Image 1: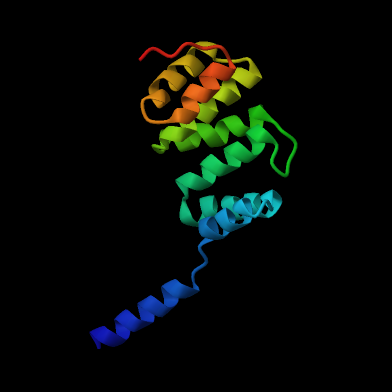
Image 2: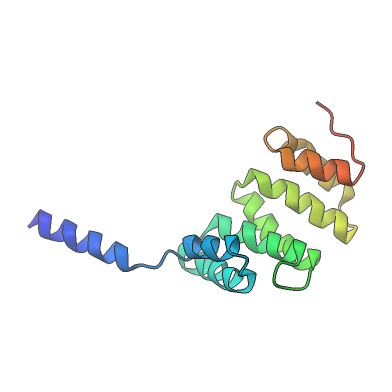
Length: 132
């Protein structure tokens, strides 16, 4: 009986869509509009931290949508709150592009630089000195 239940559960999980995975495939293929839709589904159905991160990046850099740092901010803030270290770098950039929270952006870049080269690159682009 346990074997039947296990096989049933295994087959059901195979039927469940992995929206984030499919979103990443679309993102890597350059189909940003479809990727955004899939990431939104991943957030709703799978509570995907990475979904927040990638939608934030899509808005920040205008990938398949008009670039809008203000729209990127809430997604990137969620990703940071849920523990995505690299999201700190992009959230800082969104703050800087929006010309808000400059000091907070600097702190985020400083924190993120410990673990991500991306933060160093963003800091350099905005002439922000990162203390090591």
